Amino acid sequence: MTLIAQVTEELSRAAGLRVQTEWAPAIRAVVEKYAEGTGSQSLDAEARRFLLSEVARHVTVPETYFFRNLAQLTFCAEHAAGVLRHSGSARIWCAGAATGEEPYSLAMLLYRSLGAKLGASIEIRASDLNPEAIEKAQHALYTAWSFRGAPSWCFRFFTPEAEARLRLTHPEVRTLVSFRTESCQAAASHEPAQSLDVISFRNVAIYLEEAAIQALYIEFSRLLKPGGLLALGPSDPRPIGSDFELLGHYDHAPVFVRTQREPSLAAAPTRPAAAPRPCFRAELARRPLGTAPRSEPPPERAVEVVQALAAAAPSDTTAQRLLGLAHLERNATAEAVAALRQAVFLDPTDALSRYFYALALHENRDTARAARQLATVIDDLQLRAADDMLADGSTSALELLRSARFLRTQWQ
Image (cartoon, rainbow, N blue to C red; front, side):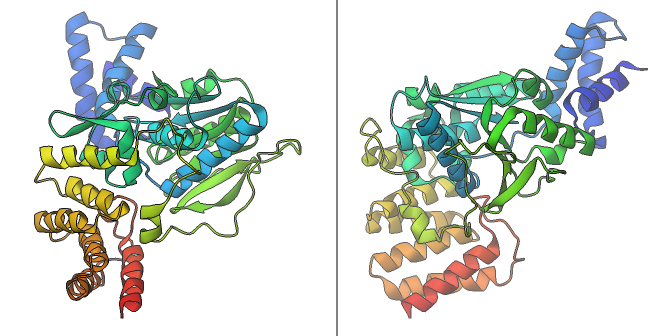
C-alpha cells in the first residue's frame, strides 16, 4: 500500500471522515513532502499522527460564526445553567469546534446568566481535528465575518485590534473554554460515562461516514447524563435507536435529549410547546438568560467596539450592518440610519441590511422612505428561492420575506 493510500485510509478509519476525491491533491502534497524528507514509505504511530494533523489543515472546513442558530445555543446554555444551579457544576463538549466561535458563544451566554467566577463550576471543552483551527481559536482573534449573525451585546467582551479584527479579551469568558486538537473519536474516548450535560456536534456529521456517525452517537449516549442534551446542525443525520428523543428545533437546528433520564435530575429539560425563530425586532432587544451581571462591560462598550471595527473596515458591509444594529438596539436611530445606509450602499443586494435600514428609517420617523425601502426588500425576496440563506448565515429568504410583509401591514 502506498503512503498516500495509508494516509487516506487512516483519515477514514481514525477520524471517520468521508474521503472526498478533491482531497487527493492536498493529501498527495503533504505525503510527498514528508516522504521526501524521510525516504519512508510506511507509517509508524508518531508519523501517522503528524501526517493526519498536517492533512487535516487542508481537507477540513473550519467554517462557523458567533451565535450560529442562537435559539439552539441559548436553549443548551439554559439547560447547563439549570444543571449547575441544581448540582453545583456542569460540563459541555463542543465536538468539531473549528475556530472557536461556538464554544465562546456558549461561554458568553452562560456568563450573562450566571455572572463572574464560573471557572470552578462550568467547563466547556472544545476539540477539532484541524490544528490550525484550534490555534486560531486559542488566539481568539476574529474578523467582522465571524459576527454576521451575532447579537450586539456580545461586542462588550471584545477589543478592537489592527486590520479590522476583534479579539475576545474578557478573561472570565475565555477561561471557561479549553481547546484540544483531536478527532471526535479520540476526544470521546477520554471521557468517563455520564460525565457531560451538553454535547454540541453541529455541522460535523455531514463530513463523516454513516458508520462513524452512528458509532459517535452511541458514544455520546454513553457520555451524556440522563436528561443531557445533544445539539446537531440542521442538515446533520439523526441518531438511530432509542437512546435519544427529539425535543424540538431552534432556528431550524434540532436538540435531542438523552433518554432514561433520572427522576431526581431537577434540571432535565422539558419539551417546549413550540420553538419558532424570534421575530427580528424582538431579537434586537433580546437579553439572553436573564439580567447581565454587574461585572459585565457596560452597553456603551459594545457600540465603541463595533464603531472601531467599522472604522477599520469602511468597505465591509457586514461591519456597517453590525454597527447599525448596535445603534438600533440602544435606540440611537439617526446613527443607525447612517450606518445602515452605508451598508446598503456598499452592497445593494444585501436584503438584511436593507430590511434593517427600513426599520431604522421608520423608527427615525422617516416613514415614506422606510416604506420604499421595505417594498424593495419584498420585491427582491419574492424573486429568490425560499430556502436561500442570507448574509447572516441563519436567516432564509422566506423568513425575511414574512417579516417584511408583517412590518408592511403594521406600517399601513
